[in-house]
Image 1 (spheres, rainbow, N blue to C red):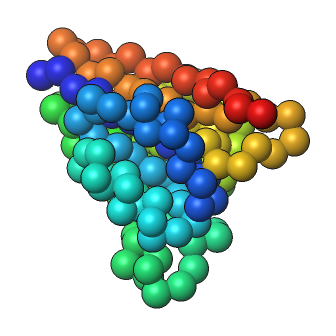
Image 2 (tube, one colour):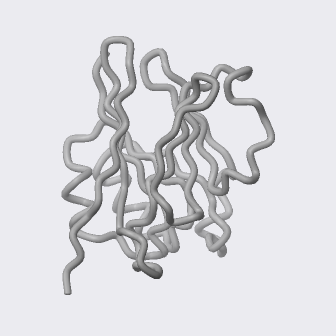
Length: 156
């Protein structure tokens, strides 16, 4: 099985055209919280099937149906999604998760620990401090996961 998963977080109500362009052709979208509006979620669902979790700014009636954690299975891999990694209350390796996706910090990062891929795509919403505007992609294929961070160009 081959698949592409677009991963983003912390849009804070701003879905940049560059992010939409980077998501073209993905099989799944994962949003790790702080969507900021129902419109962002609707736009993502118009691109590809979307899994989203509630972040700390996601309030109001539109966000009440969003779970705090979610699981997406892509081929043989289980991806565990939550907003703030500090709220992880399980051992992902023992639970059989191949990937843990989180947001909240706005800091893009990819690391491996105990055979689990930890991915934070950063933020594609309003830029904070000197952090990049970024998202990520996971390519799933022939027995492996290939994550990569995508830094989006900033328009003036």
